Length: 624
Image 1: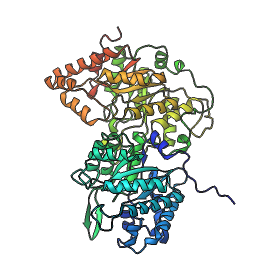
Image 2: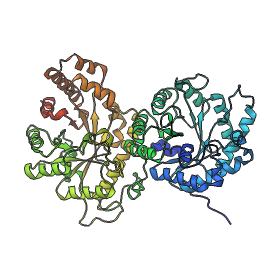
Image 3: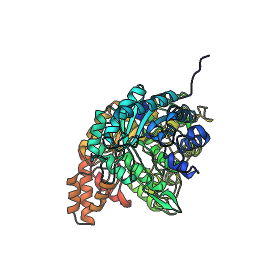
Image 4: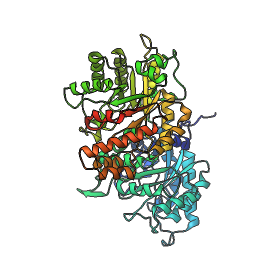
C-alpha cells in the first residue's frame, strides 16, 4: 500500500522566505534543562527515550507563532555522541528528531534540521580528520532529510574550515535541501580565526549556501552589530538568532537574564537592519518567540493568526457583488477619482476628555483650503480618545468628513469587524489602514498587543465588506460597505524592495491610494513613483515641518524609514531654537512640497505638537 507521508508546507522554504519575514523558534537545550533534564544527560537521546517532552517544546513554539522549528539534533553527530557512548545512534536520533518536529509542524510550519559542529578544532585537535568529519556531517544530513525536514541549519560554527566541510557534506547527504549556515562571533566581533563579519559573509557566499546568519554568542546587542556588518559582505538572506544575553548562576542553575520584552526590542532592530529570519538561541523561550512573532507581524511577516482572512491569497480578490465605484464612496473619494490635487492634515485630540481644541482646529483647516483631516488610531501607542468617537463628533457637530486610521494593534478579528461595521453605520467612509505601533513604544508598555490582522489582513477584510462579504465569505446582512482605503509607504525604508513587495500585497488586498511617510528628498520620492507606477495608485506625499534641530536628529536617527539629508539637518542646526527654527522647518517643507506637487495627487501633512498653523504656512499658495 502506498502512503502519502506526513503533511508539509506546499510552498518551498526559499519561496516563502522571498515573500516575507520568517520567525524561527528559540532554544531547545536550555529549555530541556529548565524543564528538568539534567545537563549530564544527552539531550538528543530524548528523541527516542522521551519524545513527548521534545514534542511539547516544539508545540509550544508553534503556538507562540514560530514559522520554523528546529529539530533536537544539534549534537547528534558521531563525535558528540561518542562522548556519551552513543556513537551508533546517529541515524536513530536524527530520524526520530526530524519525525517528531514534522509531526508537530504539519503543513503550516517549516522544519529545519539542526546540525552543530563536532566540538573539535580543525588543525589543532588530534581527533580532527577532515574526511571523517565529512562522513559524520553527511550521515546526519541524510537522516534528517529522510525524516522529512524542509531545510538544514548548520549552526553555532566558530571555525570556517569546519563549516566549509559541513556545507559540502550536507550537499551530498541531502542534495535537495536548502542550507542556512550560521556562525558565532566572540565579544571582539570575530570568529575563532579572527575573521570579521564582512569577510565571513564573503566566505559563506563562496560556499554557495542559500542563507547566512548569526546565532548563539553574547546576546542581542552584539548580534545586531554583526548582522549590520554581514549585510555589506554578501547579498544573501540573513538570519539573526542570538542567546538571551549571558547566563548567570542563580541558586546553582544557569539562567539567561534577557527578558522577552528586551529581546524583542532588538528583534525589531534586527528586522529593520535587514534580517529576514529572526529567532533565538540559548535561554530564549516560547515567550521570547511570542514577542518576536508579534513584531514580525507588525513589520511584515506572513503571520498565521486569523486564518479565515489570511488563508485567502491576496492575489485573488473576494467574490461577491461589485464594489461601489470609488467616486461614489465619499466627497473626498470623488475628488480623488477626478484627479484633483487634495490635501489632508493629521489632527488628533489631545490626551484626556476635551476634544474641543482639535475639533476647532479641524474646522479652521477646512476653512483654509484643506480637503480632509485624518485621525490616527492611538499614534505612537499613546492612550487618547478613540478616533471613531472623534470622527463621529466631526461629522455630527461640524459636518466634516474625515479619514479614520484603523490599526491592527488593539483589536482582534472580531473587534475589527465590529469596528468597521460601526464606523460605516455612523457615516464614516474613509479609512487609513495600517499595522500600528507596538505598545512598548507608548505610555502603557505593559499593554498587550493583538495584531490578529496586519495592514494586509485589514485591507482584505475591508475589501471583502465592500463586496458584501464578511471575513468568512458569508454575505453581509444589509448589503455592502463603501469604504475608501488608504495605505502607507516608507520611501526611505531600509529594505526598499521589501517595502515595495509589501505595497503590492496591500494593493492586491484592496488599497485604493497611498499616503507616504514624511519625505525630505525629492530623489527618494522619484524612486518610489517610478517603482510603483505599475500599480496606478494615487499618491499623497507625506510632509512634516521640522520644529528644531533636536526634532530633526531624532527623526533621522531613531525613527525607522525616516531619512533627513545632512544639509537639511545642518540648516536646522544653524537656526536659533524657537520661532526661527520653526520658520526654517516650514521653509524646508514648502521647498519639498512645491518641488513635487506636479508628480503626486496630493499632500499629507503631519504638523508636530498640534501646531496646525504650521500646516497652513506650508500650504500657502500651493493650490493657486
